[in-house]
Length: 140
Image (cartoon, rainbow, N blue to C red; front, side, top):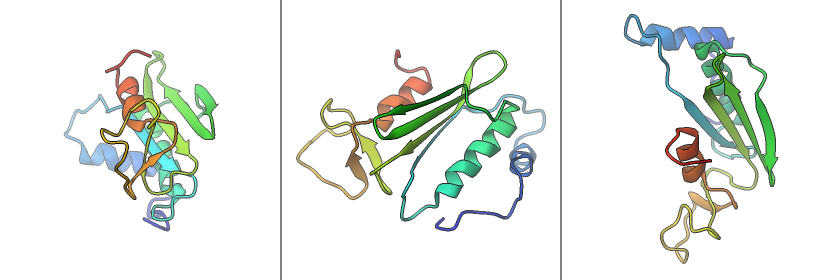
């Protein structure tokens, strides 16, 4: 986790691993929301970059993001297929470390704001809410 998996040298090689593991005839692939902190001390950011490259190759979509924006210190990239459907998104957070980002001010991500945890960090960004939006479970 710390050094990143470099056993397969290309996104197409990683995509081929997914296709080989899937049941024969699989043509639909899941949407993927990838979250990682730029300075995660446990899991290398290389893994996030590799996962994005792998899944855009699996989906056969352009590696240039259709959306590349900053929300505060955090970066959000979105990759769409040829029909305009969002298939892969990547969030690179800052100041979160190896934790799940929440937005304590809005109450998103924590039911008890007095509780603290090494694995939940108030980042002014709620991963749960953003993932639900990406999956179409919430309105934009």
